Length: 348
Image (cartoon, one colour):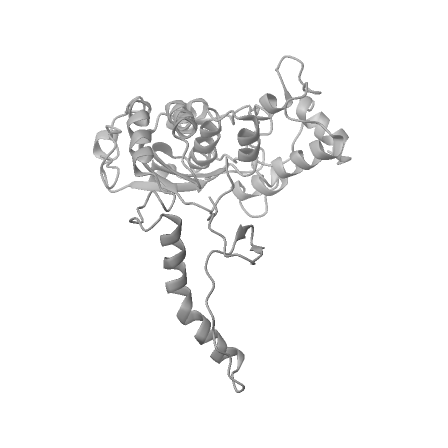
């Protein structure tokens, strides 16, 4: 909120009125550096004077600065049931401590051959679609998916997850929906949501905007770390996606803009969803429960999480030097990818 008590005869600068002016004497021999020092000496007192005028001489609180501690505490209370629903061996998913605790032995990883795997990621500009549409309860699933899918391709079992939610003004109901989605993603991945951070930073983000980051930790026996033992003649299998997942949305948003398609419009590639926005917010598939049993039985030699770089950049990361993949029998493109190809002019 801008200050209201404008100095008479002054213009507005940087979107707000001038509320305090200070005079600085300029000497004939002043340089840019000496003037800078003179001005800087007045900046602190002028700032305090302006704030004092704004609050009519009262005390400046954290809330006056735009940070609502009560809202943050309210959010914690609202999300506690979501976190408790992700309890698994090794954690109780209780909130309130300075750090989340996890007992490796209780999860079955207690010997010296246990190796921990860490992954961190976000969901990119898919966030902008969730914010524009006002649908926040599934973007958390995407956040978990982008992290735990990276763990599973290394052969690891996801154990616990932490999130970081940052915004300029905390809307409790909105943030609770986001965390509810994160908890749902953790349930799908069978990992505990043991903590997180909510940062309210006035002026850092536009109204209605927030950012997310996720952090996942898994474990694997040293002898089972993937990839290993891949040789020519091994079979390559592909698991289907649910759509675009959480990469490529800068391109998608640009194509929608060029085609003059709004998020609330009927979806041109999928008739059984209510709108374009709803179709694009289809959550990323979490592959833990489909792949982990195969890993436990040592039936898989390597996995690749196909994200931003596509097949061409991600698959080689799981192949030994001198070996290439031959992709045959690729199924036809699904509706959203056909639309992207047509709208962009890109080839296969």
